[in-house]
Amino acid sequence: MASPTTTKSQSQMDFLHHPYTRAALPFVNGGLAGMTATVVIQPIDMVKVRLQLAGEGVRAGPRPTAFGVARDIIAAGKVLDLYTGLSAGMLRQAVYTTARLGFFETFIKSLNKRAESANRKVTFGERAGAGLTAGGIAAMIGNPADLALVRMQSDGLKPPEARAHYRSVIDALFRISKAEGVTALWAGALPTVVRAMALNFGQLTFFAESKAQLKTHTTLSAQNQTFAASAIAGFFASFLSLPFDFIKTRLQKQQKDPKTGQLPYRGLLDCARKVVKDEGWLRFYRGFGTYYVRIAPHAMVTLIVADYLNLLTK
Image 1: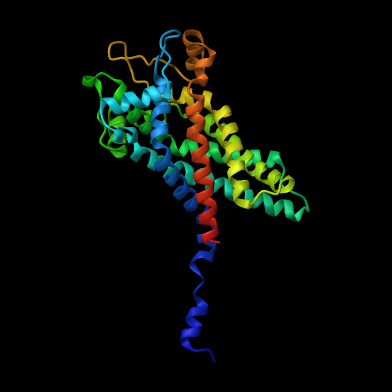
Image 2: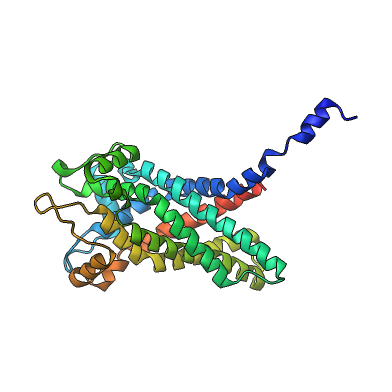
Protein backbone atom coordinates (compact mmCIF):
# COMPACT_ATOMS: atom_id res chain seq x y z
CA MET A 1 0.00 0.00 0.00
CA ALA A 2 1.35 3.43 -0.92
CA SER A 3 2.16 5.81 1.89
CA PRO A 4 -0.09 8.90 2.42
CA THR A 5 2.75 11.12 1.21
CA THR A 6 3.16 9.13 -2.00
CA THR A 7 -0.61 9.03 -2.58
CA LYS A 8 -0.87 12.79 -2.04
CA SER A 9 2.00 13.59 -4.40
CA GLN A 10 0.57 11.30 -7.05
CA SER A 11 -2.86 12.91 -6.75
CA GLN A 12 -1.48 16.40 -7.36
CA MET A 13 -0.72 17.27 -10.98
CA ASP A 14 2.27 19.38 -11.82
CA PHE A 15 0.89 22.94 -11.92
CA LEU A 16 2.65 23.85 -15.18
CA HIS A 17 1.25 20.76 -16.89
CA HIS A 18 -2.31 21.13 -15.67
CA PRO A 19 -4.66 21.39 -18.71
CA TYR A 20 -5.95 24.80 -17.61
CA THR A 21 -2.41 26.08 -17.06
CA ARG A 22 -1.28 24.82 -20.48
CA ALA A 23 -4.22 26.61 -22.11
CA ALA A 24 -3.45 29.86 -20.26
CA LEU A 25 0.35 29.89 -20.73
CA PRO A 26 0.37 31.22 -24.33
CA PHE A 27 -1.69 34.20 -23.14
CA VAL A 28 0.38 34.82 -20.00
CA ASN A 29 3.72 34.47 -21.79
CA GLY A 30 2.52 36.65 -24.66
CA GLY A 31 1.39 39.42 -22.31
CA LEU A 32 4.64 39.40 -20.31
CA ALA A 33 6.68 39.45 -23.52
CA GLY A 34 4.68 42.36 -24.94
CA MET A 35 4.95 44.40 -21.74
CA THR A 36 8.72 43.84 -21.65
CA ALA A 37 9.02 45.02 -25.25
CA THR A 38 6.87 48.10 -24.56
CA VAL A 39 9.20 49.31 -21.80
CA VAL A 40 12.06 49.10 -24.32
CA ILE A 41 10.40 50.90 -27.26
CA GLN A 42 7.97 53.36 -25.55
CA PRO A 43 10.10 56.45 -26.41
CA ILE A 44 10.11 55.44 -30.10
CA ASP A 45 6.33 55.00 -30.01
CA MET A 46 5.96 58.48 -28.47
CA VAL A 47 8.01 60.01 -31.31
CA LYS A 48 6.03 58.01 -33.91
CA VAL A 49 2.68 59.36 -32.66
CA ARG A 50 3.94 62.96 -32.63
CA LEU A 51 5.24 62.56 -36.21
CA GLN A 52 1.85 61.29 -37.38
CA LEU A 53 0.00 64.22 -35.80
CA ALA A 54 2.42 66.93 -37.00
CA GLY A 55 1.12 69.14 -39.81
CA GLU A 56 -2.42 67.76 -39.69
CA GLY A 57 -4.48 69.13 -42.58
CA VAL A 58 -1.51 70.82 -44.27
CA ARG A 59 0.16 69.51 -47.43
CA ALA A 60 3.15 71.87 -47.48
CA GLY A 61 5.29 73.20 -44.65
CA PRO A 62 8.25 71.92 -42.63
CA ARG A 63 8.80 68.17 -42.51
CA PRO A 64 9.50 67.08 -38.94
CA THR A 65 12.06 64.35 -38.30
CA ALA A 66 12.23 61.73 -35.57
CA PHE A 67 15.35 63.34 -34.08
CA GLY A 68 13.73 66.78 -34.23
CA VAL A 69 10.58 65.58 -32.47
CA ALA A 70 12.62 63.80 -29.77
CA ARG A 71 14.76 66.93 -29.29
CA ASP A 72 11.66 69.13 -28.93
CA ILE A 73 10.07 66.79 -26.38
CA ILE A 74 13.22 66.71 -24.28
CA ALA A 75 13.77 70.49 -24.60
CA ALA A 76 10.17 71.20 -23.49
CA GLY A 77 10.42 69.06 -20.37
CA LYS A 78 12.67 66.20 -19.55
CA VAL A 79 13.83 62.87 -20.90
CA LEU A 80 11.12 61.02 -18.95
CA ASP A 81 8.50 62.83 -21.07
CA LEU A 82 9.39 60.29 -23.77
CA TYR A 83 7.70 57.74 -21.51
CA THR A 84 4.40 59.66 -21.43
CA GLY A 85 1.57 57.13 -21.62
CA LEU A 86 3.68 54.19 -20.42
CA SER A 87 0.89 53.02 -18.10
CA ALA A 88 -1.52 52.98 -21.07
CA GLY A 89 1.09 51.18 -23.17
CA MET A 90 1.53 48.54 -20.46
CA LEU A 91 -2.23 48.07 -20.10
CA ARG A 92 -2.56 47.81 -23.87
CA GLN A 93 0.08 45.07 -23.99
CA ALA A 94 -1.46 43.29 -21.00
CA VAL A 95 -4.74 43.13 -22.94
CA TYR A 96 -3.85 43.28 -26.64
CA THR A 97 -0.60 41.28 -26.86
CA THR A 98 -1.87 38.75 -24.31
CA ALA A 99 -4.85 38.06 -26.56
CA ARG A 100 -2.94 38.42 -29.85
CA LEU A 101 -0.12 35.98 -29.11
CA GLY A 102 -2.32 33.75 -26.99
CA PHE A 103 -4.95 33.26 -29.68
CA PHE A 104 -2.31 32.90 -32.41
CA GLU A 105 -0.41 30.24 -30.46
CA THR A 106 -3.67 28.44 -29.70
CA PHE A 107 -4.74 28.52 -33.36
CA ILE A 108 -1.31 27.34 -34.57
CA LYS A 109 -1.29 24.41 -32.13
CA SER A 110 -4.69 23.37 -33.44
CA LEU A 111 -3.51 23.72 -37.05
CA ASN A 112 -0.34 21.71 -36.31
CA LYS A 113 -2.39 18.85 -34.84
CA ARG A 114 -4.70 18.87 -37.85
CA ALA A 115 -1.76 18.96 -40.28
CA GLU A 116 0.05 16.11 -38.48
CA SER A 117 -3.05 13.94 -38.59
CA ALA A 118 -3.26 14.59 -42.34
CA ASN A 119 0.50 13.95 -42.76
CA ARG A 120 1.23 17.41 -44.15
CA LYS A 121 2.66 20.77 -43.08
CA VAL A 122 0.78 23.91 -42.03
CA THR A 123 0.37 26.14 -45.08
CA PHE A 124 1.18 29.85 -45.40
CA GLY A 125 -2.53 30.55 -45.90
CA GLU A 126 -3.41 28.79 -42.65
CA ARG A 127 -0.76 30.79 -40.77
CA ALA A 128 -2.11 33.97 -42.37
CA GLY A 129 -5.66 33.14 -41.32
CA ALA A 130 -4.52 32.50 -37.75
CA GLY A 131 -2.62 35.80 -37.65
CA LEU A 132 -5.47 37.85 -39.12
CA THR A 133 -8.08 36.36 -36.78
CA ALA A 134 -5.93 36.67 -33.65
CA GLY A 135 -5.05 40.27 -34.47
CA GLY A 136 -8.64 41.33 -35.12
CA ILE A 137 -10.00 39.83 -31.90
CA ALA A 138 -7.18 41.26 -29.79
CA ALA A 139 -7.49 44.75 -31.29
CA MET A 140 -11.18 45.03 -30.49
CA ILE A 141 -10.53 44.01 -26.88
CA GLY A 142 -7.56 46.36 -26.49
CA ASN A 143 -8.97 49.47 -28.24
CA PRO A 144 -9.77 51.46 -25.04
CA ALA A 145 -6.18 51.17 -23.79
CA ASP A 146 -4.89 52.04 -27.28
CA LEU A 147 -7.08 55.15 -27.41
CA ALA A 148 -5.94 56.23 -23.93
CA LEU A 149 -2.32 55.84 -25.04
CA VAL A 150 -2.82 58.10 -28.08
CA ARG A 151 -4.69 60.72 -26.01
CA MET A 152 -1.94 60.79 -23.39
CA GLN A 153 0.84 61.03 -25.99
CA SER A 154 -0.90 63.76 -28.02
CA ASP A 155 -1.90 65.86 -24.99
CA GLY A 156 1.38 67.78 -25.09
CA LEU A 157 0.59 69.06 -28.61
CA LYS A 158 -2.39 71.08 -27.34
CA PRO A 159 -2.18 74.64 -25.97
CA PRO A 160 -1.37 74.57 -22.22
CA GLU A 161 -4.88 75.69 -21.26
CA ALA A 162 -6.50 72.88 -23.30
CA ARG A 163 -4.39 70.00 -22.01
CA ALA A 164 -6.04 67.23 -20.01
CA HIS A 165 -2.92 66.31 -17.97
CA TYR A 166 -3.98 62.70 -17.51
CA ARG A 167 -2.38 61.23 -14.40
CA SER A 168 -2.56 57.60 -15.54
CA VAL A 169 -4.31 55.32 -17.98
CA ILE A 170 -7.11 54.71 -15.44
CA ASP A 171 -7.59 58.47 -15.07
CA ALA A 172 -7.66 58.86 -18.87
CA LEU A 173 -10.20 56.05 -19.38
CA PHE A 174 -12.45 57.40 -16.62
CA ARG A 175 -12.38 61.02 -17.82
CA ILE A 176 -12.86 60.14 -21.49
CA SER A 177 -15.83 57.91 -20.59
CA LYS A 178 -17.35 60.61 -18.41
CA ALA A 179 -16.91 63.43 -20.94
CA GLU A 180 -17.60 61.60 -24.20
CA GLY A 181 -19.41 58.41 -23.24
CA VAL A 182 -18.20 54.83 -22.87
CA THR A 183 -18.57 54.19 -26.60
CA ALA A 184 -15.90 56.85 -27.23
CA LEU A 185 -13.35 54.33 -25.91
CA TRP A 186 -13.88 52.40 -29.14
CA ALA A 187 -13.26 55.40 -31.41
CA GLY A 188 -11.09 54.31 -34.30
CA ALA A 189 -11.89 50.65 -33.61
CA LEU A 190 -12.26 49.76 -37.31
CA PRO A 191 -8.80 51.01 -38.40
CA THR A 192 -7.38 49.59 -35.15
CA VAL A 193 -8.74 46.15 -36.03
CA VAL A 194 -7.61 46.40 -39.68
CA ARG A 195 -4.17 47.65 -38.54
CA ALA A 196 -3.86 44.78 -36.07
CA MET A 197 -4.86 42.25 -38.71
CA ALA A 198 -2.32 43.72 -41.15
CA LEU A 199 0.37 43.88 -38.46
CA ASN A 200 -0.31 40.34 -37.28
CA PHE A 201 -0.33 39.09 -40.86
CA GLY A 202 3.03 40.77 -41.44
CA GLN A 203 4.59 39.97 -38.08
CA LEU A 204 3.43 36.56 -36.91
CA THR A 205 2.72 35.00 -40.31
CA PHE A 206 5.97 36.14 -41.92
CA PHE A 207 7.90 35.35 -38.72
CA ALA A 208 6.66 31.77 -38.71
CA GLU A 209 7.14 31.41 -42.47
CA SER A 210 10.61 33.05 -42.47
CA LYS A 211 11.76 30.91 -39.57
CA ALA A 212 10.57 27.76 -41.35
CA GLN A 213 12.32 28.78 -44.59
CA LEU A 214 15.54 29.77 -42.80
CA LYS A 215 15.58 26.46 -40.95
CA THR A 216 15.19 24.57 -44.23
CA HIS A 217 17.51 26.57 -46.50
CA THR A 218 20.23 27.97 -44.20
CA THR A 219 22.70 26.77 -41.59
CA LEU A 220 21.98 29.63 -39.15
CA SER A 221 21.72 28.80 -35.47
CA ALA A 222 18.28 28.79 -33.87
CA GLN A 223 19.00 32.14 -32.19
CA ASN A 224 20.11 33.76 -35.46
CA GLN A 225 17.08 32.34 -37.22
CA THR A 226 14.88 34.08 -34.66
CA PHE A 227 16.69 37.42 -35.10
CA ALA A 228 16.60 37.24 -38.92
CA ALA A 229 12.97 36.15 -39.02
CA SER A 230 12.04 38.97 -36.60
CA ALA A 231 13.71 41.58 -38.84
CA ILE A 232 11.93 40.25 -41.94
CA ALA A 233 8.60 40.10 -40.12
CA GLY A 234 9.13 43.61 -38.76
CA PHE A 235 9.50 45.05 -42.26
CA PHE A 236 6.33 43.43 -43.62
CA ALA A 237 4.38 44.29 -40.47
CA SER A 238 5.46 47.95 -40.76
CA PHE A 239 4.77 48.27 -44.48
CA LEU A 240 1.33 46.65 -44.34
CA SER A 241 0.05 48.28 -41.16
CA LEU A 242 1.43 51.85 -41.15
CA PRO A 243 -1.38 53.48 -43.23
CA PHE A 244 -3.99 52.00 -40.89
CA ASP A 245 -1.91 52.95 -37.84
CA PHE A 246 -1.77 56.52 -39.19
CA ILE A 247 -5.56 56.72 -39.60
CA LYS A 248 -6.10 55.06 -36.21
CA THR A 249 -3.95 57.71 -34.52
CA ARG A 250 -5.85 60.56 -36.22
CA LEU A 251 -9.26 59.13 -35.30
CA GLN A 252 -8.34 58.36 -31.69
CA LYS A 253 -6.79 61.77 -31.16
CA GLN A 254 -9.76 63.75 -32.53
CA GLN A 255 -12.27 65.44 -30.25
CA LYS A 256 -15.44 67.40 -30.98
CA ASP A 257 -15.08 71.07 -31.87
CA PRO A 258 -16.35 73.11 -28.86
CA LYS A 259 -18.22 75.50 -31.19
CA THR A 260 -19.74 73.17 -33.80
CA GLY A 261 -19.82 69.92 -31.86
CA GLN A 262 -18.50 68.15 -34.96
CA LEU A 263 -15.59 65.73 -35.25
CA PRO A 264 -12.90 66.40 -37.90
CA TYR A 265 -13.35 62.91 -39.39
CA ARG A 266 -16.50 60.78 -39.72
CA GLY A 267 -14.62 57.50 -39.97
CA LEU A 268 -11.85 55.51 -41.64
CA LEU A 269 -12.75 56.34 -45.26
CA ASP A 270 -13.48 60.00 -44.55
CA CYS A 271 -10.15 60.36 -42.75
CA ALA A 272 -8.28 58.64 -45.59
CA ARG A 273 -10.00 60.85 -48.19
CA LYS A 274 -9.21 64.08 -46.35
CA VAL A 275 -5.58 63.09 -45.74
CA VAL A 276 -5.09 62.30 -49.44
CA LYS A 277 -6.80 65.56 -50.47
CA ASP A 278 -5.14 67.90 -47.97
CA GLU A 279 -1.80 66.24 -47.29
CA GLY A 280 -1.05 63.79 -50.10
CA TRP A 281 -0.73 59.99 -50.37
CA LEU A 282 2.79 59.88 -49.00
CA ARG A 283 1.62 61.30 -45.66
CA PHE A 284 0.39 57.80 -44.76
CA TYR A 285 4.02 56.64 -44.75
CA ARG A 286 5.46 59.59 -42.87
CA GLY A 287 7.77 58.27 -40.18
CA PHE A 288 8.12 54.83 -41.80
CA GLY A 289 11.71 54.58 -40.54
CA THR A 290 10.62 55.43 -37.00
CA TYR A 291 7.69 53.04 -37.25
CA TYR A 292 9.95 50.23 -38.46
CA VAL A 293 12.45 50.95 -35.66
CA ARG A 294 9.47 50.74 -33.30
CA ILE A 295 7.94 47.57 -34.80
CA ALA A 296 11.08 45.50 -35.51
CA PRO A 297 12.67 45.73 -32.03
CA HIS A 298 9.26 45.28 -30.43
CA ALA A 299 8.73 42.15 -32.53
CA MET A 300 12.23 40.89 -31.69
CA VAL A 301 11.94 41.49 -27.95
CA THR A 302 8.37 40.14 -27.82
CA LEU A 303 9.09 36.99 -29.82
CA ILE A 304 12.44 36.28 -28.14
CA VAL A 305 11.02 36.78 -24.62
CA ALA A 306 7.96 34.70 -25.55
CA ASP A 307 10.22 31.91 -26.89
CA TYR A 308 12.29 32.05 -23.68
CA LEU A 309 9.19 31.96 -21.46
CA ASN A 310 7.78 29.08 -23.50
CA LEU A 311 11.07 27.23 -22.97
CA LEU A 312 10.97 27.86 -19.20
CA THR A 313 7.37 26.70 -18.94
CA LYS A 314 7.66 23.78 -21.35
